[in-house]
Length: 151
Length: 102
Image 1: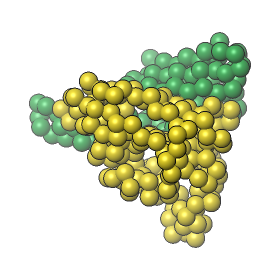
Image 2: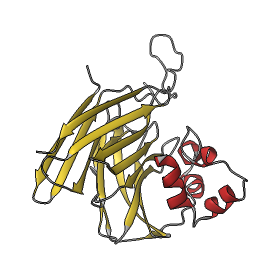
Image 3: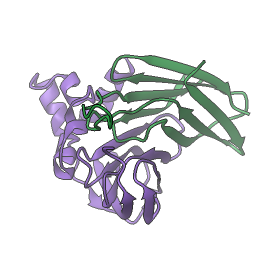
Image 4: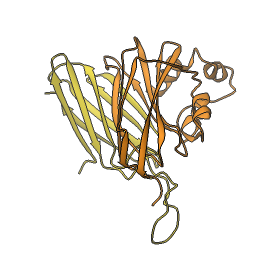
């Protein structure tokens, strides 16, 4: 039920929404049932799967270490002052599957989220904020000395 | 025992929700050092946090969120709000926890 509301709310305006309503894609294919954007192998493909073409913005703050000694646990905090921010995504450009997380801000949620992510090697961490029908991004490089993927 | 440690702290008119979840978050790309075989993927896909009857945060995750994941965010709320966090992983396992904002 919540997933349905979310799909209607966020995808209705985008191309993916058109595809859904035209019956070309089922919501399941679009959403993260282990598929879609979370399976994309490059940053560009992930953004395409999310139907986002973000423009760079200075109103997004990424709090992440410049050097991460342990790539298995890299703390990342994203905050933004962009009005009407609805979704915050964290992508790691050089990870095998760049999209790490998408946070959908609910009622009253302030525009920010913190988590910890894995990074295979030194990479840009990209934050994408969706507000209205626009998307904005910012990036910060995190140097990784010991990779967090693989043993 | 619950897999979730959930805290909700009131500061002024905002509530800071912090959660720590015990979960392996396997990507499916890591090899077992002893056997050399890939460890099957197993990660939390979705987290829903509600305060009372409002959903304040939905997180969709990929496998590159760290093991024993951490999540923190703020929302406009007050002391006494009933916070509930539930997660679902790639194997369909679920857990949830509740806490009062204080």
